[in-house]
Image (cartoon, rainbow, N blue to C red; front, side):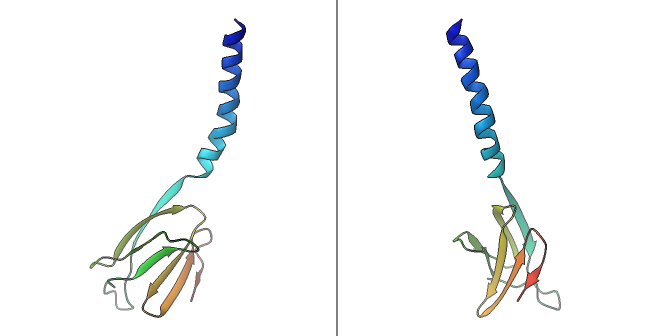
Length: 94
């Protein structure tokens, strides 16, 4: 009886200790299309999570898909041009 109570206590404790960590570490998938001012797709634009090596280049249709944390900032670059978008606020910086 005492072992069963101990096991239930440990399971209960683990549930409250580890579930919040798991929930906080969830990523979202950000998808989009990079275009120029006239709406033409841009190929090869790098989309990188700021401060990491997590990134991808847009395909021939300008499309990209990247898994990042909810509070990430994405940086877009093409040759020497750069811009950042903060996913938390939607603010853009050049």
